[in-house]
Image (cartoon, rainbow, N blue to C red; front, side, top):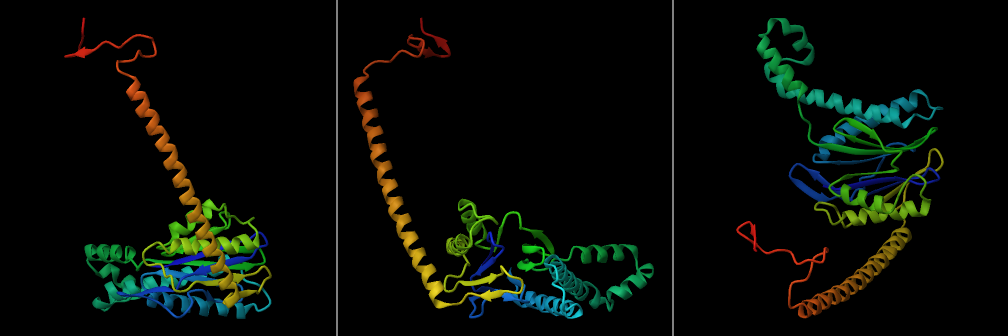
Length: 307
Protein backbone atom coordinates (compact mmCIF):
# COMPACT_ATOMS: atom_id res chain seq x y z
CA UNK A 1 0.00 0.00 0.00
CA UNK A 2 1.99 2.92 -1.29
CA UNK A 3 3.07 4.71 -4.42
CA UNK A 4 6.60 4.96 -5.83
CA UNK A 5 7.33 6.90 -9.03
CA UNK A 6 10.30 7.45 -11.35
CA UNK A 7 10.50 9.61 -14.48
CA UNK A 8 13.18 10.62 -17.02
CA UNK A 9 13.80 14.15 -18.28
CA UNK A 10 15.24 15.26 -21.61
CA UNK A 11 18.69 15.98 -20.13
CA UNK A 12 18.94 12.43 -18.74
CA UNK A 13 18.01 13.34 -15.17
CA UNK A 14 15.78 11.00 -13.19
CA UNK A 15 13.25 12.02 -10.55
CA UNK A 16 12.19 9.57 -7.85
CA UNK A 17 9.07 10.38 -5.83
CA UNK A 18 7.45 8.33 -3.05
CA UNK A 19 5.17 8.49 -0.05
CA UNK A 20 6.17 6.93 3.28
CA UNK A 21 3.49 4.29 3.73
CA UNK A 22 4.92 0.91 4.77
CA UNK A 23 3.41 -2.48 5.62
CA UNK A 24 4.95 -4.94 8.06
CA UNK A 25 2.76 -7.98 8.68
CA UNK A 26 -0.66 -6.63 9.63
CA UNK A 27 0.73 -3.20 10.53
CA UNK A 28 0.38 -0.31 8.10
CA UNK A 29 1.80 3.10 8.90
CA UNK A 30 3.54 6.17 7.54
CA UNK A 31 7.21 5.84 8.41
CA UNK A 32 9.44 8.76 9.44
CA UNK A 33 12.05 7.37 7.02
CA UNK A 34 12.12 7.99 3.26
CA UNK A 35 11.41 5.03 0.96
CA UNK A 36 13.89 6.32 -1.61
CA UNK A 37 17.07 4.38 -0.84
CA UNK A 38 20.27 5.66 -2.50
CA UNK A 39 22.14 2.35 -2.73
CA UNK A 40 25.07 4.08 -4.48
CA UNK A 41 25.83 7.49 -5.95
CA UNK A 42 24.37 6.29 -9.26
CA UNK A 43 21.44 4.08 -8.20
CA UNK A 44 18.30 4.54 -6.09
CA UNK A 45 15.61 1.98 -5.30
CA UNK A 46 12.02 2.33 -4.09
CA UNK A 47 10.30 -0.80 -2.73
CA UNK A 48 6.56 -1.39 -2.62
CA UNK A 49 5.41 -4.58 -0.95
CA UNK A 50 3.37 -6.28 1.76
CA UNK A 51 6.36 -7.33 3.88
CA UNK A 52 8.89 -4.55 4.34
CA UNK A 53 10.93 -6.59 6.83
CA UNK A 54 11.53 -9.45 4.38
CA UNK A 55 12.21 -7.09 1.49
CA UNK A 56 14.73 -5.18 3.62
CA UNK A 57 16.71 -8.41 4.07
CA UNK A 58 16.86 -8.87 0.30
CA UNK A 59 17.85 -5.24 -0.29
CA UNK A 60 20.62 -5.42 2.31
CA UNK A 61 22.06 -8.52 0.66
CA UNK A 62 21.77 -6.90 -2.78
CA UNK A 63 23.52 -3.76 -1.56
CA UNK A 64 26.37 -5.80 -0.08
CA UNK A 65 26.91 -7.53 -3.44
CA UNK A 66 26.69 -4.24 -5.34
CA UNK A 67 29.31 -2.66 -3.11
CA UNK A 68 31.59 -5.67 -3.65
CA UNK A 69 31.15 -5.24 -7.40
CA UNK A 70 32.21 -1.60 -7.14
CA UNK A 71 35.17 -2.44 -4.92
CA UNK A 72 36.37 -5.07 -7.40
CA UNK A 73 36.56 -2.46 -10.21
CA UNK A 74 36.71 0.94 -8.48
CA UNK A 75 37.51 2.89 -11.65
CA UNK A 76 34.62 1.50 -13.74
CA UNK A 77 31.00 2.60 -13.60
CA UNK A 78 28.76 -0.49 -13.29
CA UNK A 79 25.78 -0.88 -15.61
CA UNK A 80 22.32 -0.47 -14.10
CA UNK A 81 21.09 -3.67 -15.76
CA UNK A 82 23.83 -5.58 -13.89
CA UNK A 83 22.66 -4.05 -10.62
CA UNK A 84 19.13 -5.22 -11.40
CA UNK A 85 20.47 -8.74 -12.00
CA UNK A 86 22.24 -8.64 -8.63
CA UNK A 87 18.96 -7.72 -6.89
CA UNK A 88 17.08 -10.51 -8.70
CA UNK A 89 19.79 -13.01 -7.72
CA UNK A 90 19.45 -11.97 -4.06
CA UNK A 91 15.66 -12.29 -4.34
CA UNK A 92 15.82 -15.77 -5.85
CA UNK A 93 18.30 -17.01 -3.24
CA UNK A 94 16.05 -15.75 -0.44
CA UNK A 95 13.09 -17.48 -2.08
CA UNK A 96 15.08 -20.73 -2.27
CA UNK A 97 16.03 -20.52 1.41
CA UNK A 98 12.42 -19.91 2.47
CA UNK A 99 11.22 -22.83 0.33
CA UNK A 100 13.90 -25.03 1.89
CA UNK A 101 12.87 -23.95 5.38
CA UNK A 102 9.19 -24.65 4.62
CA UNK A 103 9.38 -28.02 2.84
CA UNK A 104 12.79 -29.63 3.44
CA UNK A 105 14.03 -28.64 6.90
CA UNK A 106 11.03 -30.40 8.60
CA UNK A 107 12.27 -33.58 6.87
CA UNK A 108 15.84 -32.88 8.02
CA UNK A 109 16.86 -32.19 4.44
CA UNK A 110 18.52 -29.33 2.58
CA UNK A 111 18.53 -28.65 -1.17
CA UNK A 112 21.88 -30.44 -1.39
CA UNK A 113 20.89 -33.52 0.60
CA UNK A 114 17.51 -33.66 -1.16
CA UNK A 115 19.27 -33.90 -4.53
CA UNK A 116 21.65 -36.50 -3.17
CA UNK A 117 18.92 -38.73 -1.72
CA UNK A 118 16.28 -38.38 -4.44
CA UNK A 119 16.92 -41.90 -5.71
CA UNK A 120 16.23 -43.34 -2.24
CA UNK A 121 12.96 -41.46 -1.68
CA UNK A 122 9.58 -42.56 -3.01
CA UNK A 123 8.99 -41.03 -6.44
CA UNK A 124 5.61 -39.59 -5.48
CA UNK A 125 7.16 -37.81 -2.51
CA UNK A 126 10.00 -36.48 -4.66
CA UNK A 127 7.53 -35.23 -7.27
CA UNK A 128 5.38 -33.56 -4.62
CA UNK A 129 8.32 -31.89 -2.89
CA UNK A 130 9.76 -30.72 -6.21
CA UNK A 131 6.43 -29.22 -7.23
CA UNK A 132 6.02 -27.48 -3.86
CA UNK A 133 9.52 -25.97 -4.03
CA UNK A 134 9.14 -24.80 -7.63
CA UNK A 135 5.73 -23.24 -6.92
CA UNK A 136 6.70 -21.66 -3.60
CA UNK A 137 5.21 -18.17 -3.43
CA UNK A 138 6.93 -15.22 -1.79
CA UNK A 139 4.86 -12.28 -0.51
CA UNK A 140 4.13 -9.82 -3.32
CA UNK A 141 7.23 -7.67 -3.85
CA UNK A 142 7.77 -4.84 -6.30
CA UNK A 143 10.59 -2.35 -6.62
CA UNK A 144 11.67 0.48 -8.90
CA UNK A 145 15.40 0.66 -9.61
CA UNK A 146 16.48 3.93 -11.21
CA UNK A 147 20.01 5.02 -12.02
CA UNK A 148 22.51 6.47 -14.45
CA UNK A 149 25.49 4.68 -16.00
CA UNK A 150 27.79 5.39 -18.98
CA UNK A 151 24.99 4.27 -21.32
CA UNK A 152 22.49 6.80 -19.95
CA UNK A 153 19.67 6.89 -17.41
CA UNK A 154 17.50 3.83 -16.78
CA UNK A 155 14.25 2.91 -15.05
CA UNK A 156 13.48 -0.71 -14.14
CA UNK A 157 10.47 -2.26 -12.46
CA UNK A 158 10.98 -5.63 -10.79
CA UNK A 159 7.92 -7.64 -9.71
CA UNK A 160 8.48 -10.88 -7.80
CA UNK A 161 11.87 -11.41 -9.39
CA UNK A 162 10.84 -10.48 -12.96
CA UNK A 163 12.24 -7.24 -14.39
CA UNK A 164 11.11 -4.80 -17.08
CA UNK A 165 12.91 -1.82 -18.62
CA UNK A 166 10.83 1.38 -18.83
CA UNK A 167 13.34 3.58 -20.65
CA UNK A 168 11.18 3.86 -23.78
CA UNK A 169 8.06 4.78 -21.81
CA UNK A 170 10.04 7.27 -19.75
CA UNK A 171 8.29 6.73 -16.41
CA UNK A 172 7.16 4.00 -14.03
CA UNK A 173 4.95 3.68 -10.96
CA UNK A 174 4.25 0.86 -8.51
CA UNK A 175 2.00 0.40 -5.50
CA UNK A 176 -1.69 1.01 -4.80
CA UNK A 177 -1.54 4.42 -6.47
CA UNK A 178 0.29 3.25 -9.61
CA UNK A 179 -2.74 3.42 -11.90
CA UNK A 180 -3.54 6.97 -10.87
CA UNK A 181 0.09 8.07 -11.30
CA UNK A 182 0.42 6.38 -14.69
CA UNK A 183 -2.88 7.91 -15.84
CA UNK A 184 -1.56 11.37 -15.02
CA UNK A 185 1.71 10.74 -16.87
CA UNK A 186 -0.24 9.57 -19.94
CA UNK A 187 -2.55 12.58 -19.88
CA UNK A 188 0.46 14.89 -19.48
CA UNK A 189 2.27 13.17 -22.40
CA UNK A 190 5.32 12.60 -20.19
CA UNK A 191 8.28 11.01 -21.97
CA UNK A 192 12.06 10.98 -21.98
CA UNK A 193 11.99 14.14 -24.11
CA UNK A 194 10.03 16.16 -21.54
CA UNK A 195 11.93 19.09 -20.03
CA UNK A 196 13.53 18.94 -16.58
CA UNK A 197 11.04 21.34 -14.98
CA UNK A 198 8.01 19.62 -16.52
CA UNK A 199 9.27 16.19 -15.44
CA UNK A 200 9.71 17.36 -11.85
CA UNK A 201 6.23 18.86 -11.84
CA UNK A 202 4.61 15.84 -13.51
CA UNK A 203 6.29 13.48 -11.04
CA UNK A 204 5.10 15.49 -8.05
CA UNK A 205 1.58 15.87 -9.44
CA UNK A 206 1.41 12.15 -10.27
CA UNK A 207 2.07 11.38 -6.62
CA UNK A 208 -0.62 13.85 -5.51
CA UNK A 209 -3.11 12.31 -7.95
CA UNK A 210 -2.29 8.88 -6.50
CA UNK A 211 -3.29 9.98 -3.00
CA UNK A 212 -6.94 9.22 -3.79
CA UNK A 213 -6.05 5.50 -3.80
CA UNK A 214 -6.54 3.65 -0.50
CA UNK A 215 -3.27 3.08 1.34
CA UNK A 216 -1.26 5.89 -0.29
CA UNK A 217 0.39 8.15 2.28
CA UNK A 218 -0.50 11.83 2.28
CA UNK A 219 1.61 13.17 5.15
CA UNK A 220 4.93 13.28 3.31
CA UNK A 221 6.28 13.31 -0.24
CA UNK A 222 9.96 12.55 -0.77
CA UNK A 223 11.79 13.56 -3.96
CA UNK A 224 15.14 12.34 -5.24
CA UNK A 225 17.12 13.39 -8.31
CA UNK A 226 19.74 11.33 -10.14
CA UNK A 227 22.00 12.96 -12.73
CA UNK A 228 22.32 14.43 -15.19
CA UNK A 229 26.01 13.88 -14.38
CA UNK A 230 27.35 10.45 -13.47
CA UNK A 231 27.67 10.11 -9.71
CA UNK A 232 25.01 12.71 -8.83
CA UNK A 233 22.30 11.28 -6.57
CA UNK A 234 20.51 13.81 -4.38
CA UNK A 235 17.52 13.89 -2.05
CA UNK A 236 15.64 17.10 -2.75
CA UNK A 237 14.45 17.75 0.79
CA UNK A 238 14.84 21.52 0.72
CA UNK A 239 11.81 23.19 2.30
CA UNK A 240 11.60 25.99 -0.32
CA UNK A 241 11.25 23.44 -3.16
CA UNK A 242 8.46 21.51 -1.48
CA UNK A 243 6.75 24.74 -0.48
CA UNK A 244 6.82 25.93 -4.11
CA UNK A 245 5.51 22.60 -5.42
CA UNK A 246 2.69 22.61 -2.89
CA UNK A 247 1.84 26.21 -3.76
CA UNK A 248 1.62 25.43 -7.49
CA UNK A 249 -0.36 22.28 -6.72
CA UNK A 250 -2.98 24.22 -4.74
CA UNK A 251 -3.24 26.77 -7.54
CA UNK A 252 -3.71 23.94 -10.02
CA UNK A 253 -6.49 22.38 -7.96
CA UNK A 254 -8.25 25.75 -7.64
CA UNK A 255 -8.06 26.35 -11.41
CA UNK A 256 -9.29 22.83 -12.15
CA UNK A 257 -12.24 23.30 -9.78
CA UNK A 258 -13.10 26.65 -11.37
CA UNK A 259 -12.91 25.09 -14.85
CA UNK A 260 -15.03 22.12 -13.73
CA UNK A 261 -17.76 24.36 -12.32
CA UNK A 262 -17.74 26.52 -15.45
CA UNK A 263 -18.00 23.49 -17.73
CA UNK A 264 -20.75 22.01 -15.57
CA UNK A 265 -22.77 25.22 -15.68
CA UNK A 266 -22.33 25.47 -19.45
CA UNK A 267 -23.62 21.92 -19.88
CA UNK A 268 -26.57 22.64 -17.57
CA UNK A 269 -27.52 25.58 -19.77
CA UNK A 270 -27.11 23.51 -22.92
CA UNK A 271 -29.22 20.61 -21.62
CA UNK A 272 -31.93 23.02 -20.44
CA UNK A 273 -32.06 24.38 -24.00
CA UNK A 274 -32.42 20.88 -25.42
CA UNK A 275 -35.20 20.15 -22.93
CA UNK A 276 -37.11 23.30 -23.90
CA UNK A 277 -36.71 22.45 -27.60
CA UNK A 278 -38.03 18.94 -27.01
CA UNK A 279 -41.01 20.27 -25.04
CA UNK A 280 -41.85 22.83 -27.75
CA UNK A 281 -41.65 20.18 -30.45
CA UNK A 282 -43.85 17.83 -28.44
CA UNK A 283 -46.54 20.48 -27.90
CA UNK A 284 -46.58 21.36 -31.60
CA UNK A 285 -47.00 17.75 -32.76
CA UNK A 286 -50.59 16.59 -32.25
CA UNK A 287 -50.49 13.78 -34.83
CA UNK A 288 -48.02 11.20 -36.11
CA UNK A 289 -45.42 12.55 -38.51
CA UNK A 290 -44.37 11.00 -41.81
CA UNK A 291 -41.17 8.98 -41.88
CA UNK A 292 -38.23 9.67 -44.20
CA UNK A 293 -40.19 8.28 -47.22
CA UNK A 294 -42.97 10.77 -46.71
CA UNK A 295 -45.47 8.08 -45.66
CA UNK A 296 -47.06 7.36 -42.31
CA UNK A 297 -45.85 3.93 -41.13
CA UNK A 298 -48.65 1.34 -40.97
CA UNK A 299 -49.93 0.41 -37.54
CA UNK A 300 -49.13 -3.08 -36.37
CA UNK A 301 -51.61 -5.38 -34.70
CA UNK A 302 -50.85 -9.00 -33.80
CA UNK A 303 -47.95 -8.94 -36.22
CA UNK A 304 -50.17 -7.90 -39.22
CA UNK A 305 -50.59 -4.53 -40.90
CA UNK A 306 -53.96 -2.88 -40.37
CA UNK A 307 -55.95 -2.53 -43.60
